[in-house]
Length: 93
Figure: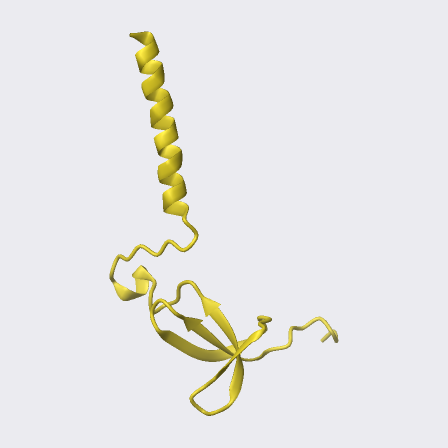
C-alpha cells in the first residue's frame, strides 16, 4: 500500500444533542472539542444535527427537525410567488 494517503482513524464520540444520544466509534473527522466518556478517558467530540436516535426512518416517528431554516425559506418564497400571482390576477381584472 502507498504510504501517507490513508486517513488517521482514532476513537471519536458523536453526540446528537436533540435526542440526548452519544456513541463512540472510529473516525477520521477533525474536531476541536473533547468530552469525557463513560470509561473515564477523554475523546474528540463531533456534534450531529441528526442521528439514528432522532431520524424518522429509524424511530418510526415523524418529527420536523429544521436546524437550517429550510422550511421557513420555502414558505417565504411561496408567499412571494403567491403575491406576484395575485397581483397579476388583479391587473387582468
